[in-house]
Length: 373
Image (tube, rainbow, N blue to C red; front, side, top):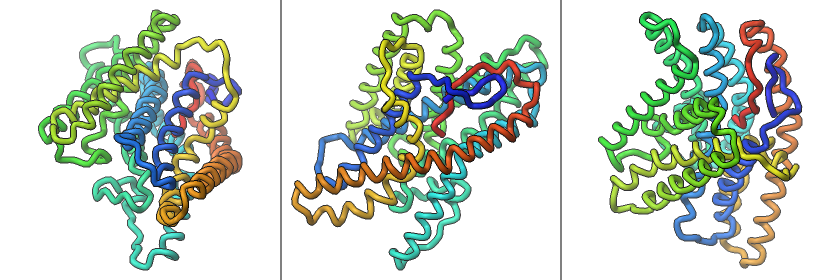
């Protein structure tokens, strides 16, 4: 999925980012689905967080390319940022609120002690860290606030810099905003090592900022060669693997804290490497999984895996595998229908309405792949 200079979706896609998106959601889905099998794989629990970190870097990469173009305009204004917000919200909010409502209705029927928590409606659920109701939504709490605050921060930074320097570029603004966020939140985590949940907004806000740096680096022509894309993939894998190793040192909080910058940098390099990698062969199934990845992410855990995991614990192993395969099939089917009839509708509505709002100001907007979020 990509967007043309007129902001309409076209048939063009970045296959490399489809690989990232599909890979991330499959890591998360497989990690969570082990609950149905009641099979324990040592340290595999980190897969869910690693998959989400890959999504975070992808999100930062995609919106970073948009914001670079926005701040390259002669006079970036709050009106452009408002259009950016409306565009993001039409992409992310409709399906989120539909799934949230479904979870609430089911919980009211099946869970006598359940009470509606209104923090989920404003993406503040991470402050009380309740993993049992719509636990997978924790990443949306980080992403939505990032989308809301970072463009404002960028606009303030742009205006301040313009007071002393007339040659400020969008790439300069986004790079510096990302570095400020990364430095600030890494210092905050080191100051409180081990005293925060992995989902906490205040301690994970920098996760998407690594993708912003990748977006800035993507403007360099030298990285477009196969040699450098492979180099970025290798370096990214080393950093990502290092983060994994540090995360399992449960008794050494300093090492666990190092997981976040290593994983952030590693996943951002992987996104960048896969984006520029020249694929000799592509697979339509990767593109399809990429398209429905947002639906998979929202539908799979609270609606299917968690309710059934208690029941499958009483079944023989062979029957657990049958249930596991059945749940995966249902999740993929419903996610495909969700994309076809819900997400696609709001994507069309978004492109029709927001194109008019942007008008001629962003006619030079380069093509960039559609985000999963």
